[in-house]
Image (cartoon, rainbow, N blue to C red; front, side, top):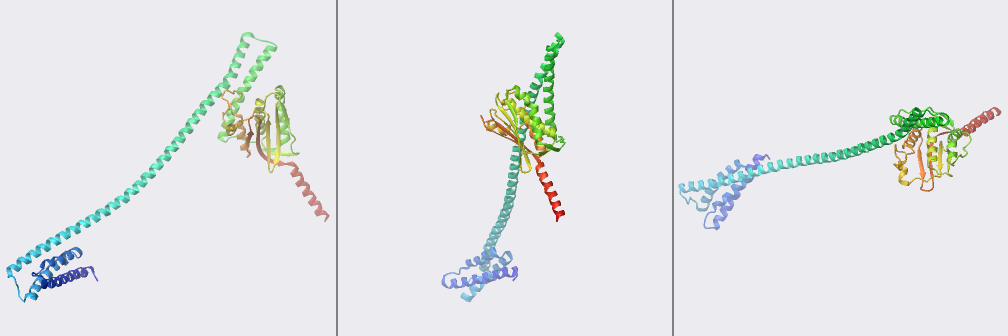
Amino acid sequence: MSDTVRRYGIAVLASGAGLGVVFLLGRILPFEPFLLFAVPVALTSRYAGRGPTALTVVLSALGIEATLILSMGRFRFSVGDLWVHAALFAIVAWAIDSTTEALRKARRDAERTASHLEELNVELEQQMDQVQMLSEDLQRANRSLAAARDVAEEASRAREEMLAVVAHDLRNPLNAVMMTTQLFADTEPSGQKRDQLLGVILRSARRMNRLIEDLLEVVRQDSGKMNLDVDEISVASLLAQTAEMFQTTAAENGISLRVEETPPGLTVKGDSERIMQVLGNLVGNGLKFVPRGGSVVLKCELKGDEAIFSVADSGPGIAGEDLDRLFEKFWQRRRTDKRGVGLGLAIARGIVEAHGGRIWVESRIGDGSTFYFTLPAVSQRREDHLQSANTFAKESALWT
């Protein structure tokens, strides 16, 4: 059934129903309730539209005439009265239809407005989501900027501290060289005094050169330009050379420096000069802080495919909160401690890590400190065993 047929069908049904109701009530009431024909007009106007409403008005007018004929067998009104009533009914019907159409239009407008508002609400929610995302991005950016600012401030502080430390450690030996040179110029010393002054100049120059070398080493490590001359090195030889290098200093300070026995034939893969630099740094630090009568012990053990070096001292120990910072550049437990610039352990860590090893420290206040680092190991004994086994297998094959 098409929509047009349905709507006009409503008009016909409503008009017929109105006629039936008016006819029945006209037999009961002392007057004809023709006003009830306005109901089908209102219903048709509400649900069927203007075309079916016009049809309902015509059918209702015919229904009024039919009611008069059926109830009285004749017209009770004159033709003029009938036209007046018909006109009034048409006006009422027009008013009902106009009002209904206005209400229908208002409802359509309201629905369109509601739909538009719903679309605006959806768009607003999307914009709010975007604003929320932008806000979160802005917060993250602010946090990143704050973190970057903190890093920059920390770098600035570190640079200022580095410049202060370097300036201090260069100024002292430079002043010593200048003063000693001035004494040479003023007094022209000879003999033992001359040798003493030359010794001061030489020691000051070495100290300045050591500081410059340390700074260059840090720069090389940070830029990834540290070169390694890797070879197989005897562990026993490394430890013996290190102990020999520091024996005089240890004896002058009344400190026992010894090397524990290493596994026979144990060798490591690495740059001998760099590894000696690490061992020298660790032993030198131990001799700085161990009191007279103390000890520094060098040792190396084989565990799996790693050689674990250790330098243990009987010094005052290190506080737990300082252990994680020992290997930072320019860090010193006490700023007033001028026995170094805080680069040695940082350089040692860079060298060990460049070899693929690890470095760490274990210490407690009052119990001394032990520094460890690892290097890739090559056990000569293991190679000898393997060679012997291969030789035995070949000889057994010949016997069979």
